[in-house]
Image (cartoon, rainbow, N blue to C red; front, side, top):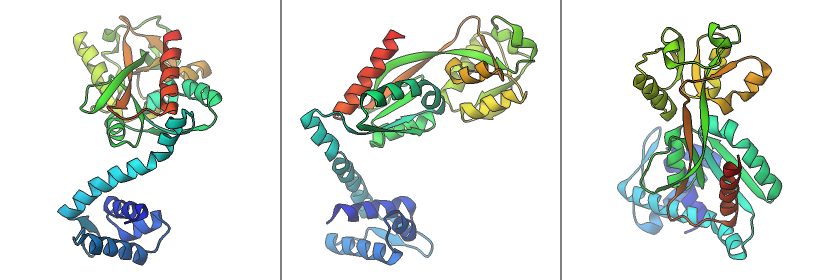
Length: 295
């Protein structure tokens, strides 16, 4: 049984298609089918139920899928393990972060790390909060970044930093000249919010409720960039992390006003429990923590 065959099997299950799995592995659909048939013959089990348009995994196939993923993860980490033995800071780092953190908080740290360790290739996936947790648990990412980190089974949380939350509005808005803004000042404003399932939205809603304020949500979006664009074209106001709007404030397209009382958003680093830490991962984590403390 070859590693390549296990990968092909996983791709067939995940895409529910022989042709799509073939495309992922530069193989014809027929060649993929032959690989799966050979695997079933070797194991003496039917692994896939073939339909006219798609296929689905059998109970026996589900068992193999789980084992195959573990085997592939171990195989893919061999290079990192060899580097660890030699204590070499090299290889790849796959990170996962929510949009606002990945696009606005992380870049200075990434630049500093890449300058210090040019032999490490860093990849960042921009995901919703629930997907970041899932990628860390599955091993797709060695480190995740979320706001308002919550305890999850199999996840270790390291504190990172926090963001000041500010009200944003267009420069010509009546609130634009304010030095600070109390939640009560937003009661009659059209409010542009994050989607209800996002932790930042839930935290802001709770802050308003505790202040006895009910805002009217005129729009809801799943990422920071769309929220900012909606405010820029004068569709309403919003509350966002200050780090995410520094460029727009500098360019004059948005005004950012602190809340009174102040509101801050904690950011946490997610790590999979009991996962070995490569030299590259250890050094990146140390850089994050040391620079965050110095700021």
